[in-house]
Each structure stands twice: as structure tokens, then as C-alpha cells.
Image 1 (cartoon, one colour):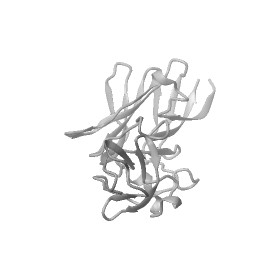
Image 2: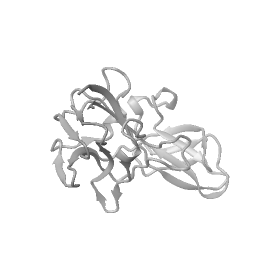
Image 3: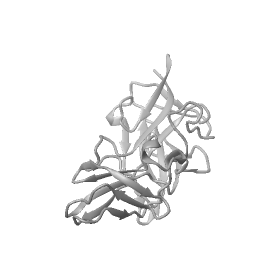
Image 4: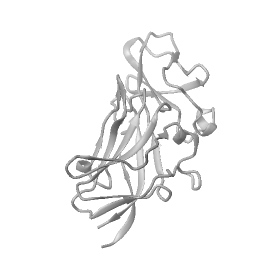
Length: 228
């Protein structure tokens, strides 16, 4: 049985659409929720994830909407904005702390005030109801992984302690040596068994949205080894 290195993701390019399920987390009341599920499909024998070996790349975003009035350019967010990889300037960040659109089209962000959690757009959006959408990186909350058997029964978390979600924004995830590796034990799931990504946050994760300029608002990638 050959074993090869792969990356599984929310785009389902490796496992297939039927094996990947992405959903939002419960925020009212706030509750730890499975936001992404990876099921081992029939054409694979097993999938193995090893925390210290396999990188986890995660760019989680929420969505906040505002009414444009033709004059206002500054918008206060409920999200806690932090400089991605410590870089305050958007052009120096590997991915921007916020993405803004008006009527579904991306617009320029002129400035971010991290102390005030506010975003300054380069020009005032036209008048409209909820026509301004801002997609900030989620910085509040924690992440866990858990296993689920073929009967849908939860087998428990891989590791008893959660990982703060803001730490993915602290480092350059795509740079060798600074990618995120979690101190969690090896986990193997076989055909029709599932690995859940759990999120506990006051911000609701968004995976796809018509107002976002790209296919996916949030992205998640997990390096694994797959045995056929």
C-alpha cells in the first residue's frame, strides 16, 4: 500500500466534495463548533496527521456589513484587528488583515487603525443598505481537532488543550521554518472516519460569500500522509 504526502483543504481538491464539509460556528450563544470536517473517502485506506511533522495553514475570516452613505470612509469593526506577522502596513503583510468590498467589488483600504479597530477606505461608498462588506481575520477564539468514527460518534479531541487562533496571524505560514505545527499527537483515520476542526470564537467564520472577490473567504490547509 503506497503512502504519499498530500495537503487536504477546505477546497476539497484532494478528498473530493463529498468528503469535506465546511460550516459556520455557533456564536449566539458562543459554543465550540465543528467548522470543517475531513472524511476519509472510500478510495483511500487511511489518512495520517502528525502534529510536529505536518503544518497547518489557516486564514480564517469573518464578515461585517455596513450601510454606505456616500460620505463616510471610516468604519469601526467589532473584531480585534492585529498586524499580520507584526507588519502594520497592508502591503507588507503576506495576506491583508482586512478585505473590503462595496456591492461585491473589492475596494482599496487606505488605512487600518489597530488601536481603534477601524478601517479607512480610500473613497466613500455610495448609499446603500449593507452594501459595504469588510472581512477581517478572526483573532478571537481557539481551535481544536477531534476524531469521529464511522457511526458519527465523537471519539474526543486529539489534544486536551486548544490553540489560540490569533497565532496563525503571528507568523508567515508559508515560509519554511515559521509554519504552524501543533504539539498534538499522531491521528489516523480510515475509510468513512472523520477529522473535525473545532472553533470556539465570538466571531463567525465565513467560508464562501458572494461579496468576497475570491472563491473562498477563509482557507484551511493541512499537510498529511495518505495511504492507498
